[in-house]
Length: 386
Image (cartoon, rainbow, N blue to C red; front, top):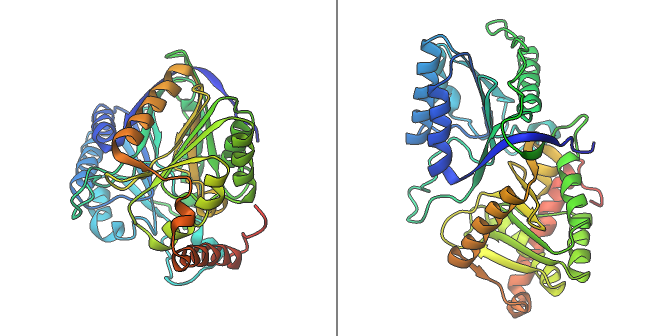
């Protein structure tokens, strides 16, 4: 489905938790009617407790507060935070809590990976930042690197619809009679700015490929420059092909990826693709200062996306995701400058021949990791030739 771009928005780019969490907590603290939040992770740490405190206070003053977290990403939430939130009047539910470890059944891999918030139908947040400290404790490094966007304007309407729709689905699936279905009062959707944007989701019904198609269409039409920053980058064949085609027609293609090992199998699987990407003239930077968690892109300094969707099979084929796509030179250049600073100050560029410098054992390990990931995806029924 083609993105539905809506003009008249006011969009504020938020860089990592240091900017996102104060803005989110301020909005919750000022709420008068409804707070609605979704998060893959909701951790019982200083940040999680600060957000939980704001939600509790809002509920106690009569605000309807809804919270939906993922059963895998927030698997400790029902024991650690949910009881106190429910006691304060927060409507808190868990998406697919029945996790059976070491089972690769397809439905168990369909996680809620979105990070969305809506307050009073007047302001929303979309991005990749979970409710968790981004200081990477106990590691001694800089805060986790990620982005979110604060939104006012017509884009609020589709965001509210997506939040309400999933809440209703979970209510019906759980036969939950404690919480009422949300009243569909319209979001405040009049123009608040001059920026044009679209809200995209990935689900397993009507919007299976919306986010991927938006990327592919933008890359295919790029004329000057493509910058991708992604925490988990394992694109399919078609995605890699359009990137190489863009590089061959003279577009400058740069990819900022994870330099620190967080999940070894995925890290090595991604590195297996370096040889063909570098050979096509694509520049690759590895972020070194901390864990890279961003899922953003800027194309030709006028098209930009920020959201929760990685460019890997789990995000593009399995999880519920949400991104915004922005057609605005000012917003795109702001993100472009931020990414440029990160690459200049906190990342290392790989030499074009870095793949061939590796010992054959290292290259074999990386290709074995890549093929193992593909096999695991294939077992779930989502392999194919993508």
